[in-house]
Length: 284
Image (cartoon, helix red, strand yellow):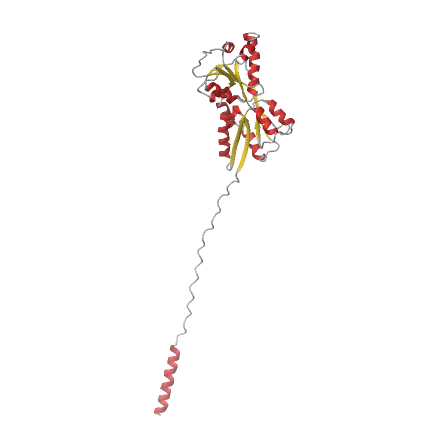
């Protein structure tokens, strides 16, 4: 009987122990954190490919075009404008002989027309973009005491002109022709007898007068404004001439798109204001 009781007690304890067992609840693994994404590097803005625009321009445009070239470069990153300033006739010859250039501008229509004839400039592409007129320049101390146009015919006056094949030289002689009607039929001959040198471009005329190597010179109004140290004698409108300046891209330009853009740029209101500041006149 005791043995039966012991067995019953042992069985009860075993069942109790089994009933008390707790099934473990699985603990979910911690969620994997999303990786932190590094921001993608934004590639820098591409640097424009460097390009050079070569402009052959009349010497009288030196000061104005230097300013205009800098403004064009600022508006067109990557573009460098280089200038070849000289007498229009010399520039035309250089182009005909194969000098690389993108844009040509001259102080007369003759040189441009010759390039059109030679197919260096396309037909009907050139445009007049400014005008100019002439003025008499004198050294600051005016040693010859010149006061009026008639004084150019005084004996022993040292006068400097551009050569006749240079646009400003031809214009100067046209002005002297017109002065004959006011100052006598031989006025031009008397003035030309005082010429001590004929220069290749207008800037050389200015330099001769500035250096005191001449008593007077005949140049464009724009050159007199650029040389503010000189005195001037104005030429009345009825005796003066109007010089028309054409501009055009060249057919063999290696930068046709920029050359076209530059020619349009000089016709803009912004550039026309710069040109007038330097003494050039508006398009007629």
